[in-house]
Image 1 (cartoon, rainbow, N blue to C red):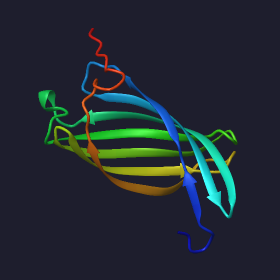
Image 2 (tube, helix red, strand yellow):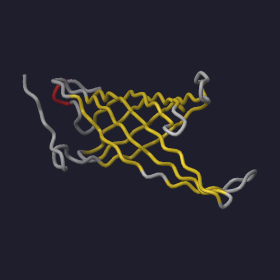
Image 3 (spheres, helix red, strand yellow):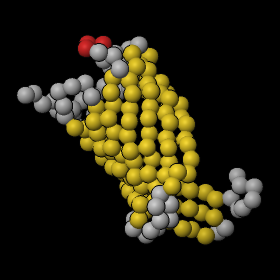
Image 4 (tube, rainbow, N blue to C red):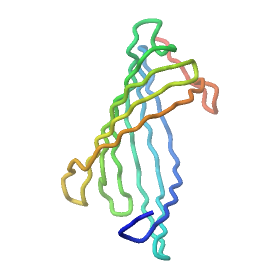
Length: 155
């Protein structure tokens, strides 16, 4: 609901793949690539904006040994996510994120997230444009129970 311009409506279907990097530690390293097709409706006109987002992240438990990733423990996440505009062929923005999380129960975690966002026009250097603060409530599902089971690699 815009006060100084006409209202708009956006539909954003997204498809992506998350790939985990196997390691012997308790770290979760992953790449989450997504294609999204942004469809805007404003003033009886339709415009679109296809883009590719690629988040590279590491999740690190703050508890040591056997307590890592258990209830009543903390963890942190660091990641970077560039947004590529596919229609104009340029890097639209980059988000750098830091998270502190707490595992409440086996299937419940709370996260406090900070994003720094950098953006700019095509051919221009990216400049800091704002902060995003989020609070997430995560419902955790067991790994290896989905369509693609988790594969552990032994040395």
